[in-house]
Image 1 (cartoon, one colour):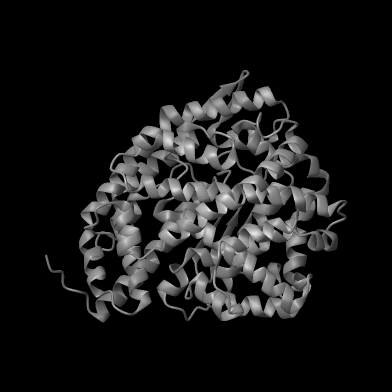
Image 2 (cartoon, one colour):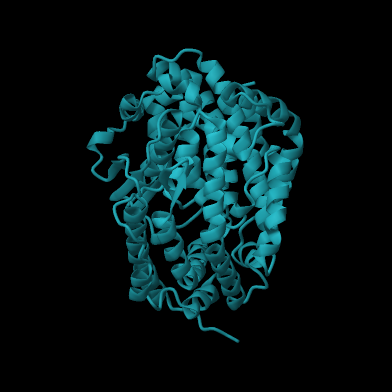
Length: 496
């Protein structure tokens, strides 16, 4: 069936509406996940833009795709708007349950969203197990049925858009490069296996007193929490350290009226830090739920990378260049600032930090955990999204992640541990982008590049491009290099 492509005037109207739609969505997501609003109400927002998220609009924008990359990004947005329309009710209910659910562990009532922070902060291993088993039981009983419905609806939406599967929609129609990345992930898992066995075993022994063979999933949040280093990361110094770091790069955080930090503790606040670019570049929200120690610092600096990127994006950019584009770019900027908290040179400059090299070595092992985990996640998602029935992939999720990490995940997370649109691929590419760009910054400005105003000038220039270039294009223009996943592993090896 032939579809008539929109005129340029009609495309511009779609862009205008899309900009307002995303603004309203981000405002709603911010207020709910920051714990300021009890319920997540997406339906009313979608109802105000019925044509924007219709299948007819998605098909029409697809017919307009030509050599202009902006139109391809707009087509992806239209497809995802349609998929979001189909799954919004599931999204609302999942969010409501996450905010409402409470369990009791050892006679203590604990809200669902506080379970992971509770596990991370719990020194007693037996109690960590009870907390994690309570979390998994809630997920299995209450969230998995809705998550499965949402996944099936997304799969049905992909077929309605003319694709054979969700995978085929993204890989073959929307042009998301997945096969080459998957090859690199398989190679990386093979090449770093022995390194992980050594480094992971040492990391778990140092932080929770058990080796990798004995470690269980309830030990992981505690390991990542790194409580033995709490004294080195006082919460009262965190914001000041960020302000001082940005100041040396030529950025006055307090004078940035377009960036707001939301770092207050709230019971309903999501434990997952996030940045909400409500208006780009004029209103950007940075949100974390403090739990103590280095984790808070990582979260703050990661989200600050997002926030500064969006806050410095040129207001003259098109909707696609400000709002859409390649998510590996903004994730790369987030990773660049987050990695400072693991850099011995930065730790020595900003904090009265003893044994920074030891901390950097331990954190290199946690980075390897994440790198291997996301490689396995991508391989799992390729199988999941080629399937018609996600329930069949439950055991495969456990198998792939256990093979990568030597620690079995909870089978109840086999659908909840999946972000839409193959976002795992953006994280993976962003880590390679960050590793190669950081090497370039070191070569150009020295090991303390983060204290050089000239480096800050370059960053602001690159940030002003928003999401216009892909990570590959940005890296090639800035450094002349080709993005390679092996660079992320090589950066980690530096610390061992």
